Amino acid sequence: MRILRLTVFTQGLQLIRKNSSDMSGNADFKSAKSIYDFTANSIKGEEVPLSKYEGHVCLIVNVASKCGLTPTNYKELNELYDKYGDSHGLRILAFPCNQFNGQEPGNSEDICSFADRQKVKFDLFEKVNVNGDDAHPLWKYLKKEQGGTLGSFIKWNFTKFIVNKEGKVVERHGPNVDPNKLGANLEKYF
Image (cartoon, rainbow, N blue to C red):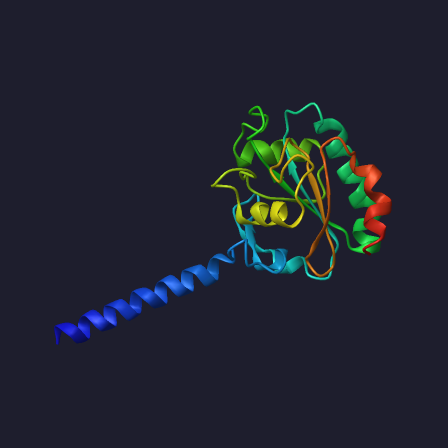
């Protein structure tokens, strides 16, 4: 009788582990086939399966509210969204990150307030780490797929990844590339 209970208990634990890993949607970044294998929490804390962006060209960017690059990037990300969002289905996924000189120190409420003042129209997610062991799995995947010039790590705020309609990372652009300069690059994938 004890062996039967132990077996049932062990099988139950295995089922719970399997189901919780399936629900996370954050596949091992090394074996992921596309961004659609991941989930991320929206700035409101809701889990978002990135498969919802299937069939859309995406621009994924790490953002910060207190960076010298913030005014230009937020303004131009909005402009890109205005130009290509409805007409071409562009989706912009912005991930706040505080890993660069503490330039995104606030909580989700602070970030939402800032985004409201900037009249952000694109999708904003919870603050994540983009480098290190505790980097969000999506960001590990992005860096694996498109390494940088001096290494695959993210060097600063506003690093941009272009993802095609199949969820594959096709381009990476550094913080010094203003969003409006990406129009021709994006148009290749629409």
